[in-house]
Amino acid sequence: CRDWMSALPEELWDVPLTHLAIPSHDAMSYCLDINSPLVRAESDFFRLLDGVFSCFTRPAIFRWATTQQDKTIEEQLSMGIRYFDLRVAHKPNDSSSDLYFTHVIYTHVTVLETLESVAAWLEAHPKEIVILACSHFEGMDDKCHESFIWSLKKLFGSKLCPQKESALTLRSLWASGYQVILSYECQLAVRHQELWPPVPYWWANQRRAHGVMTYLDWHKDLGRPGFFVSGLNLTADRYYITKNQKESLRTLTYSNWEYVRTWLEEQSPGSDAGSLNIIAGDFVGSLPLCSAVIALN
Image (tube, rainbow, N blue to C red):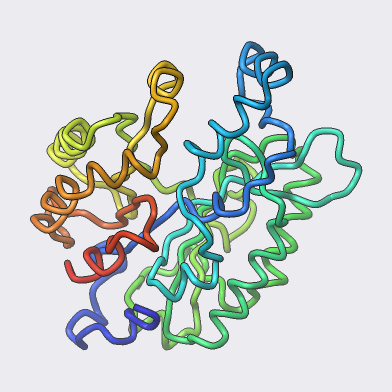
């Protein structure tokens, strides 16, 4: 899976990336900082609860917000992940300009040091293409955005594929030296030709695999956009989390995996209305999601 794009059959080199099956993952939950504040979007009630009963809330956050254990961004790239959902934020009351990733709480590694690792990995794998989807941006004003965008341009340079690029095939991207498609979910992005619009994410917000698959099948019947993500992720509400103290996102994902795997193996990428494109899941290091998605091509 390390260089799966360059290993694809030559007849797929001229197929648009929107018509390939691409593995995805919520990449940064492996390095959550248990001592960090909650993200601003959390409710006042949960913030109060966390302040008084952090000995209960923090372990619960870790059990249900961690979607991958001990796999760094480089390891995820080497496993085959090529689309990264990156929720970027500036910590409250932080006098520095550092940005962090979020998933209920903040990571202990910064955004730029992580993306520097991505850039270094791409240097060593010149025929692999990644899609970086930056979103959320809590606590960031226009000045912060412009500084971050400038840093992204400086870091990836000529690897950034401009939005005007019409032929998004492996062969054309290789010929141009483009390796990064950078999606940026902010109105400021229209000023920059290197930034792509947000990628639609089909998220079912369901606890059982059957509910997730039903939701995705319903969405497929409505037709497909260009790039889009089909989320196989399971989601438990807070009532369920409170009632099931011994469970976690990991146990939930594992117990539903066979149903998910069976459904996934029946899917196909391509230009048809019912085809899939980017496919996201959790615990990709211990479950064979990447190989199953890549095998669809």
